[in-house]
Amino acid sequence: MSLAIVWFRRDLRLADNPALTEALANYDQVLPVYIQPAAAAPWDAGAASNWWLHYALDDLRQALGGRLLLRLGPALETLQDLITETGAEAVYWNRLYEPAAIARDTEIKQTLRDARVTTASANASLLFEPWSVANKQGLPFRVFTPFWKSLLNTGLPDRPLPAPDLAGRLVDPAGFAQVSLDGLELLPAIAWDHGLATAWQPSREAALARLDEFLATNLRRYDEGRDLPGEDWVSRLSPYLHFGQLGPREIVAATPEGEPGGAAFLREIGWREFAHYQLYHFPHTSDAPMDVRFDGFPWREADDELHAWQQGQTGIPMVDAGMRELWETGWMHNRVRMIVASFLTKNLLLPWQEGARWFWDTLVDADLASNSLGWQWTAGSGADAAPYFRVFNPVLQGQKFDKRGDYVRRWVPEINNLPDKYLHQPWEAPADVLAAAGVRLGEDYPAPICDLKASRQRALAVWDQLKKR
Image 1: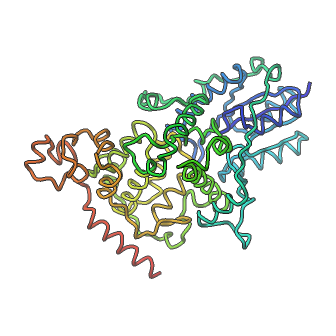
Image 2 (image 1 turned 135 degrees about the horizontal axis):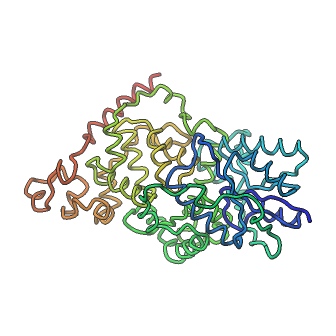
Image 3 (image 1 turned 135 degrees about the vertical axis):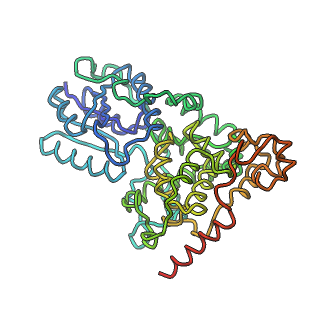
């Protein structure tokens, strides 16, 4: 009987999985395989992402009836070993679009084809291939709105593949060497993950349930809700999308665009698409600015301020709430992501790369494309970026989008008893108000590590110098 290997990566689902579907269409049996790299490489998954991956792999293994072979090692050598051991005639996988993944997959495809092994890759994670979209000059789009209009004019794909019938088609991996799921060492050695386990269920079933619940209850208020961190009105589907437990075509097919909130929600799927598109065409932007004027930007070095930001101890409640939510749950509301990123890069003048690395390690939805685009957008150095002189004022942002203080009070309980008037700026509260609330700045809660007005002026002065180059 003919046999093909299906190499799972970040496509951890059975439905709308073209590599799996095509392998089953062309071969009698398939061997599902997941390979965890043994050696460290730049932009390997961070700790929070690895936590999610552990449980997502367990969920996929259950969906496959336990027939998922786990290996640890270099991808090419591991696949070559498996081909020898199993007699497989082909290897199928779904594409990844990060620079290192493209280089690796290109080498694997060429090496295996030279050895007369059939290889085939497909698109499971994007609506469109990045190379298939261009502006009127045939060049990559650098601005989101015309990019998204181009996709809408083409028509969003909304016919996901059904889950294939696997009865009698999967090879039992028991006869081959493999490692256990725990042997992949994805979970933390020290159990800091209680908050993640409380906040998330990394399963396909949970992804579908979350999508259904969001569309039924909160889609209609998404236009407003996407800016209100104190409300649970956003989809929270990003980690499921990142690991491929849910595909973008499935979301498009399920979302009624004509309903209130539908177009805005699909536009956010478009931003994810744009992020992958940008990283594909400008691969250096994971580490370096797209705007070359930022190559020599005079970023500061201030480890104490960076640490305070990471730990949610800046003395700026809206910033601290976001950073604490991130540490506890592995996720942060998008509005707050922009606020904390602006504070780091503009008020503190610390490099966006430091923020990107911290997010990379602590987000369960850490995605190189989206993370890079988001940080460069806020810093002012990326594609379609916010102007550098746009500095998010965390006090005004809190007063506008967390009016009742529900979000800040949840994550910064030290200042729970402050009146709404002073909740987002406790340093402005009179001494008797602070005393009545049981707040001692510098003791119960930090004094601000910077003056928001003065630090904004400092950032604008640096920008003025940059413009003159």
